[in-house]
Structures are given as C-alpha cells and as structure tokens.
Amino acid sequence: MNGELLRRRFRVLEGKDGVRRLYDDLAEIYDHSRLLYLTRRLERCEEEVLREWLKKFDSPILDVGCGSGRYSLKLASRGVETISIDLSLKMLKVLLRKLEGHGLRENVHVILADGENLPFRDGSLRGLLCTLTFDHFQEPKKAISEFSRVLKVEGLCVISTLNKEHLKLLRRLLGISADKVPFLGETIPPTLVYETGHTGLEIQQMLSAYGFKSIKLMGCCYWGLFTPFIPKPMFKLLEKLLVKLKNSMKHAALHVAVAKKSPK
Image 1 (spheres, rainbow, N blue to C red):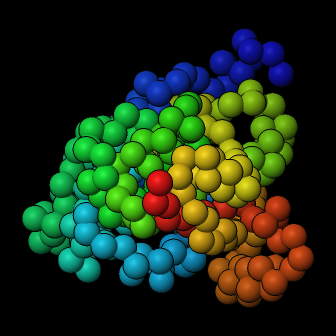
Image 2 (image 1 turned 30 degrees about the vertical axis):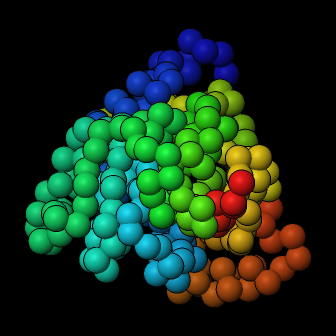
Image 3 (image 1 turned 180 degrees about the horizontal axis):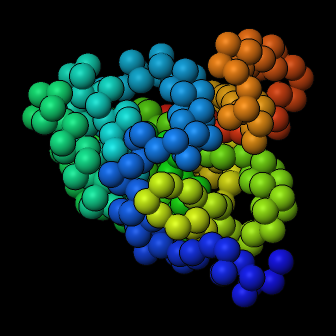
C-alpha cells in the first residue's frame, strides 16, 4: 500500500508530538471506548500477572506513562507514594479527577513529563513502573538509562512491551508502515501513531546494559490479535494452558520484564 493511500485511510501522527496528540484526543473516552477492546484485554492480562508484583513496591514509585491512572490508583489505594508522569496533559487531568473522586489526591504527585528525560534526582526513587508505554519511546535505550539513573540500588523496575512479531503481523494485514500502529475511538478519526514492539529478551538485554539484574520475564495474552473474539471464560482457560507450553513466550502478545537496579 503506497503512502498516499495510507494517508487517505488514516490520520498519521508522527513522533513524540504525535503520541502526545493522540492521547490528548483519546483522554475523555479512553477508559470506556468500545473500540479499544484489544487494549482492554491486554490491560486485564497484564494486571493479572502484575498483581503480586505491585505489592512489592515501596514508596516512592514512579509510574511512567501513567495515562488515566490504571496503576497509580491501585498503588495510591495501598498507601504507596506515587509519582505519575505522562506526556498528555489531558490524560493527567482525567487522572486528577479520579484521584479527587477516590480521596487519593494526597498520595499521588501528577507531573507533565517525558519518560526519556526524567526530571528527578539520581537515586531518588525506590520503584518504577512503565506499562504499555515503552513501545512509544523513540529512544528506548535512553529511557532505560534514565530509569537506571533515578532508581536507588535494589529499586524495582517493571516494563511491559508488545510482542514485535505480533505487531509485524498486524502491520502486514493492514498494510501499514513498520513503525506505526492503528488506534480507533468514537471521537477520533482512524489514526496511526508511532509504536514499536520488543521481545522480552530485548528488554532484558537493555536492562542489563544499564545496570539492572533480571528477576523475571512473563508473557500474557497468548492469543494475540484473536483475543477480542474469544469469550472471557474460554480465554482464561486457554491462557492457563498456553503458559505451560514450551517456547510460550513467543506466542504472548505482551511481555513483562521485572528487574532490580544492581549495585555498581
């Protein structure tokens, strides 16, 4: 598919400013849009594998690319001091409304900031969470370098990333360029925005290069692009079965890496 035809079908948003604009446009509908059904399924899978890990975080923790506050709210409700950053001001405003509604405003510091250029002192944080955000970074190694810089020794770091092989399949099916993914929403035109995928091994290697020791690598959402069409009870059963298969990670739509900042 040539570039001109692609631009007629989709609004194309480029680079970091494009990511910011997309989430500003989606902010008011993000949590309840019926067209983000695949995102919802990925979120539920991710939350299942992270449930016990969230309990291991100590204050203060940084939620990078917090969006409308999926994890910030969970952490704050447990009394964990949370710093929530995002590029999208409108998403942060949605989070602020939620915090006020739940009486959690004092537990969360909401900051407009970029995960590739963190505005925090060296070694000032005990934990960092970056979920369904890392693939939007155009300089992922710089982001992990920043994660390492701001974390204390033994600080816990959790990153989730989309399986790049699944994204390649999606791009081939839709005929879209190699660094874009499609987003749909009731109040926005069909949009392409910068988002790449990684394998769990790639994330582990980057973490290791910047002073992290790998603790665990997990996969979830093993049915990938087909997950929205599988009934929920059957989906849960299949997830339990597929996770036991040899080489199951390559079939997981989402990879979650857990690591700790190592002593120098």
